[in-house]
Image (cartoon, rainbow, N blue to C red; front, side):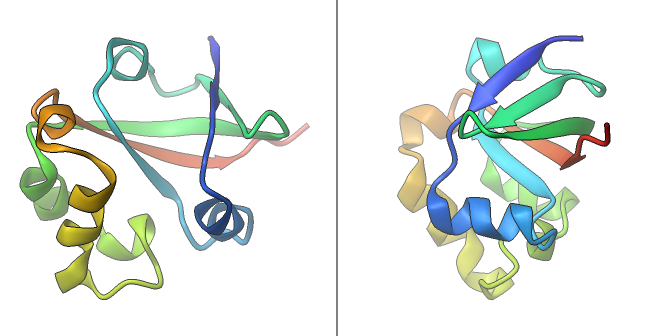
Length: 108
């Protein structure tokens, strides 16, 4: 098991801490693509989470065909989520592939 620190924008971190956002989406950089179920995440250097499932996708379209949009962005309408994701990640980053991390708080 490894521990990876991820930095999350405050509005998305709040949704994760409320338990409403359970899937974190990232471009498949090498350090992200090698994460596995059971690995730990330290969100914003403060909040401990466990990865329960990892999904690997070619792009955002495939991601949204296989993941529940509400788990990714509970306050966004599913039909605008693709645009929102592409606003965060350039086409070059999307072309690396996409990783969906299903996470939950680490229990002591």
